Image (tube, rainbow, N blue to C red; front, side, top):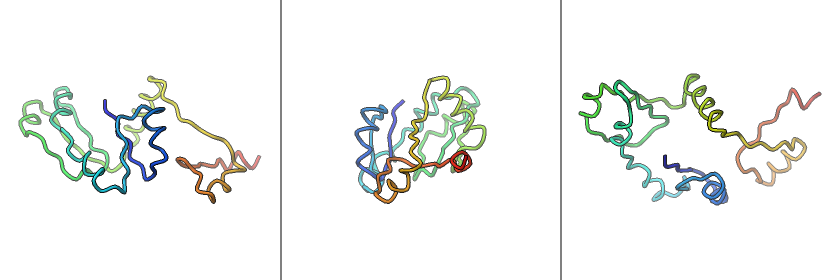
Length: 134
């Protein structure tokens, strides 16, 4: 697998590449960088599918190019969805669990608002309101 991280902030580059192991880092506001990942070799991905396999496009690629025979001869399908559904989300969670890929969390409820004001948020905050009121 080759992993590309898309971000609005260059400050996440070092962690994405060195700590999380991304192969490439793209700033989403950089027009030239955003053009590079568009040329995706779909034929390569189709060849990895078993007979009657399905390639699911998550999101909105600008263009999809492939050799039609790859679909017909292997009885393969390409489908699209803006976000993964319940089944895909469960498969992703199962994959993460079996490969020991876990979320990284920080619990600093009292500092969350202060960091938000300072724009010192690396990814996102989720506040467990029910448990914070106990």
